[in-house]
Image (cartoon, rainbow, N blue to C red):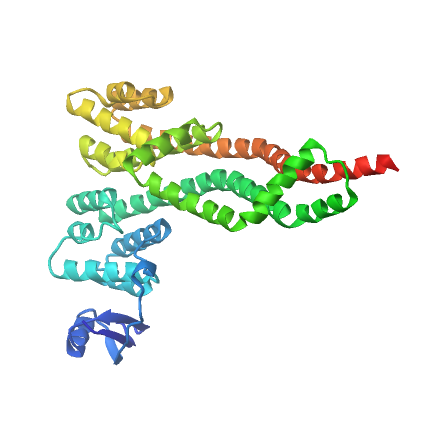
Length: 400
């Protein structure tokens, strides 16, 4: 269908504009008239050239949180759903997400429920989102469910930023140290090596080793950088395989300091997701199925699915969690209290908040420990290279 750019005014007299696909200009005008928009101008718009592998078909969690909160506010203000979706279509900057919302609006206008329309776009709306929307539509509390979803997504975004903070700092320092070492071996050490050869200085063992590394770096610098880049892609490919994902996730959990943080993050995601689904009226088995895919670690995902199997056999969630895997003792105790008092969703929410705070404290503690360790590591690498070049100078000075 052709793409049209239009301008006009809404029923409040505000100027509005946008882009929309339609079979014809007349159809577009009829659609906008139904939405109480007075059109002042319509024109064909040429579509830009898109390269498939560069085309962005993704919705960021932050964009999804903003969309959910805005739709909640519009529905709470008693605006019709179709008009609310139209407003959000015009406000969204992400072209892919704009097209998704426009398609949802058309499906709702054609008679589909909001939940059914969203299920057609799994890249933007996962099972958790669609199940809660369905629950909100059935109970007549769609605005409340959307607000819960926005709060849930915002907390997940904050949790992810903490994980990035914990992972990026050491990775950046180690990468910087390796690059500096390669540069010194490639460009600086050869200058000293030529001077030592001219002077005929006796070379200590450390200097000989460094010079051999320098010769290797000079001869194979292209292959070194190609190998570094290839290793990144190979790791990503390996991690995307079932066996690779299992091996890397197990290895991540065993890394000192970082492993404990990743486990707490996974437990926080599990408890918060389960709390949100149960409070939204989703069944226990369905909630556990959806929750397993949000853990972010296949080891813990397996534990959740095993606990789901045990619950399906008639056991309580507490017993299922205890027998399925090595979940923290505090988690099973809080779940037990929640089941006994009938406040399982509240207990899980409090547990998620507790683990969020634990992640904050663990990240701060880890960074305070890693700072001196990283400085010693970088200093050790650069210092060793520098000292290895000065040792022959000291031996030459002793000869005079």
